Image 1: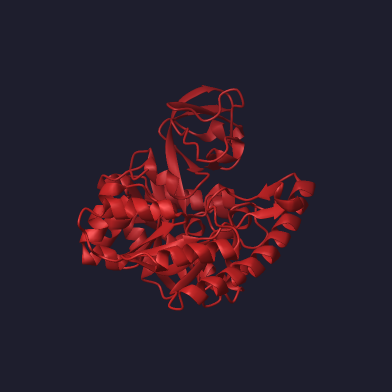
Image 2: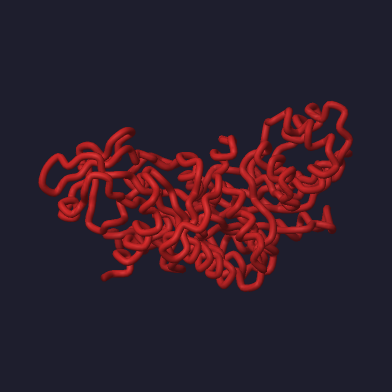
Length: 400
């Protein structure tokens, strides 16, 4: 029996009393992935990206481990909810236009002490001030450095379009704008190199493309390490009390941790290990989060139909954004239909061994987005479900 077949047998036994659709997290794999992130971080604290987890119980589980410290959130409403729930170090990784949320933040000492917001434009400071509604709490802010690699005199760009602050001088000027502004305190810098951390460098069947990605990423790491260090020096000249410099992501943990200028690493997807992280040469994890769909039809030889499963992930549309049938091994989508909203035909010889009501296990393309589809995650240890914990959705929250 292969390791994957053994996992399938465990998951089927653990959930035999549960009807699909359902989602699980294999806690042994989850904890092993957490250990791997810490190993690669080489002693630097890891801030957990909540958008990749979207479950309070699992955020609490990983933050209880030595080496993990703080949450990186994705909306202001989520940040405030987490702070009210007892999370005392929440970095909002994206600028917000949530005026109601900013009024709550500026009026509550507990929230203002726990939450740091992201800015990269003076207009965002203006919006926060206009939203205060009499609140006088000092708002902690973090500046984001654009990490994109710019080539050919800036005519070619590699990387996500995030912050407009690309140069150390631009970041320092924004730091001065914060320093001049009453009611704000500059505490951190963030720089997320998505073109390194979030792009696999071992694309199956594409050796030339894979080599090109590795060359690009090596150049990007060198360029960013120098620019990030210069940016941190420039900002510290304005704000000597800077508390943290955050960088990295699951795919770049060890590289980012090697930079002296970086004080903490961000990661989250590596805990669940969705399918987008299968194509990396720098690390290997264990799939921890899966979902199961029930077989509801047997249209013919070598074909079964499962209920639903068409859960595409965000990003540029393409086959890599689709879930993949994982267990039993050997099933594939019908190329004419793909994964469907209500039903999904699956092709392959394993289909002939599946009965009505059997479970087919899938892996989602991106980590936390799976939790937008399910209210509950069933936590599996060995071949037993030991707990069922609510996702954000299960607690009544869909923040985006």
